[in-house]
Image (cartoon, rainbow over all chains, first blue to last red; front, side):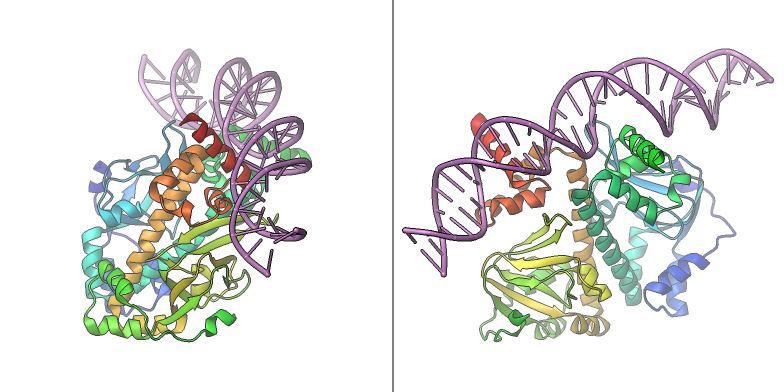
Length: 205
Length: 205
DNA sequence: CGCGACGTTGATTTGCCTCAACGATTGTGG
DNA sequence: CCACAATCGTTGAGGCAAATCAACGTCGCG
């Protein structure tokens, strides 16, 4: 947990997250500021574990810059990537965060990243104080759920080549930023098989 | 959409939904009543389509009694069941409901069901009026998302026999209420294969 | 009764995994 | 600056889980 204690940056840019929140629901300047005051900026080097399965996740992180991955480990040690969080995304273990239970997922940075943390306690009291913030996060969670429903459907119903094509369409910049075997684990296939898929596609083109 | 016009029942029981909401977050009596006033009770016979893919879903339904299923159809006509909503669950196409976009999923009753509908418009204005309600639904959506993350992980990482065993553990009463091929579509396997799984288990026992 | 939806069972196929070997690249300590 | 290991991606042979296709029995219902 050493990464939690990094020095607070003096030059944090709250522009992106401010726009991010305002896009969800209108906030008065004072309301927005109350939220920003409670954020803890952190600079985290690449390949740092932010959360290990079993720990309790008492924070949610907004990614100001960099790239973060959340994933599950199955009993054979294979990992299933739940999310790649790039700039302007949130990442957390929601179940652990809301229930205070030990997390089942792990979270790590893939690049040097600047994160803005909000603690569970602060968030709760902010919600009580500023209902508009509760609305913002309700909307964010709703979108998240709708997106995961889509992904679930695609994962069950579509064969791997389609899923990969769709992934490239929606995240064209990701392959340049994350290792290929993690993309495989996002798609729910083995690295070897993804490599063969790519071989086939390249062969055709 | 004829089912939407059924006569309003005179003897609707709001006890279950009241407890359901109060369990999420405290509501004052007046706040709760404002919500209940905006519900539209509906009795719907079994095997009725509540939503067809392509329509816009402007309601969320609380299941007071009965059983409702939401599902996606893939291009080959196979369906993927997203949810079985029994008593005390909500069902809706969240993406369509919040975006006003054409739905990608379909929803149908599996049994004669008593539903309590809330319309999108009413819900929005209630949220503006009663922040505590916004909190209730934020929490419900959060739980829903956490549960779907778990299911996603299980679907990708576990083989079918484990998924079926887990399903039976968590929903022991469902096989008696819904056709087996729908359970297969919930598990993401074919009806034939589920039948063979059951054969194997019965053979062992 | 007879039709259609449902579940079962078997033969065959296939999409993806496993295991293993092999370059290429990166980074790290001597 | 180089030796070395570690990580990463590729490729191939073989295997397995689950799908597909087809036939058949059963039940509920019009």
